[in-house]
Length: 443
Picture 1: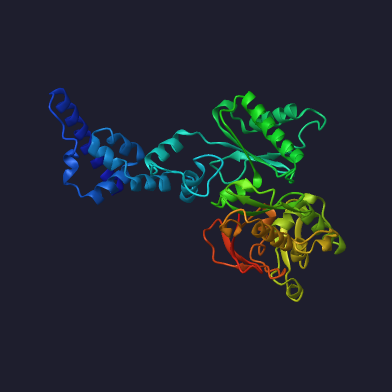
Picture 2: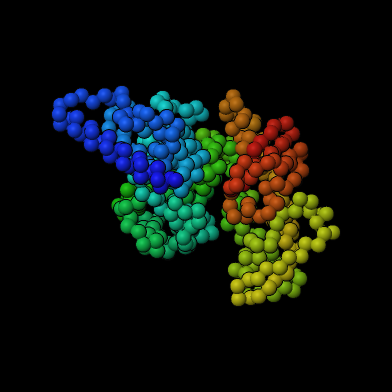
């Protein structure tokens, strides 16, 4: 049926174009308030035909006259095309166009004076080539395309790439040249988004200078390599944007450390304080290795231990009660056969809340988040305290089953499960002794 309607549309629209050309050649006026032969078609059916015809055909009809241009530029039509013709989720598009398109610094209110034209939004997004994404983590770097959900490869991070004693410029140039070479893409054809690891957490002048120096070096190298446009943003801010937020607290479980980062309107609030816990994915893997060795479970490589952590481990809702349950589960590691774990499965993730179990003298993750919330509340940066009421979890270790919904008491602070807001994000509630409700998103 859709194919038949499209053929009828093409036939009638061709006749309308020909009649317009004939009337122009005869110097006769054309009624620009008319849709020609389509005047007899009900508007809802006409819009459905436009949707079936596709964005290209709809855009062509917009050049016939003012009436067609008014009809074709309807926002509802192009919202439909944006939702069904592009790979990017609609909520991401809407968030980007309404919150980020105006540039940095972000405002607490929209500066958009003119209403959005989604026809223009569609045409710009189709015209822009895919961006290269380079996620420079502290453990290793992931790289790939913006149009895909998963990275296409990984390498050593640029903080450790090449000779440490070499100048930063030469190391970065070697690093980016290697990434582009592996992706087999021309540097001058695609913009690049660089995720910069969180470092130099303090609000001191020396820390500011170090952060600025790193960003300037990244921009300088990439522009010297003829990259058309560069966006270098820290990982916590990008995680917040991925959750469709511009303000909140980001709990970023990295490779070596976990950072709790308050962000207001896209800017890291270092004067409020970035809390850092000396636990990350590397420590979790190492703790699982120690537990396996204590229980005489033999393995050949740390890659096997990491695979077991990612596929079998979880965070218990009630740690003490979990010991009385049968928690045995098995996983087949490539080249090493089957492994069966029991209490090791939930003991691994528990060190995030009880670092002393791994020999680390630090506050638990729940305590660090509660402390950051208290600092945000005491800072009184805005008259509205809602900016820190969203907590976003990011990092691979945040994907451990049970982590986002676990309950941990800390002077009245605990995480409380809340219904999911989408397939990609888990939404939970956080409550503290302040009596505030906070949304928690795991990405």
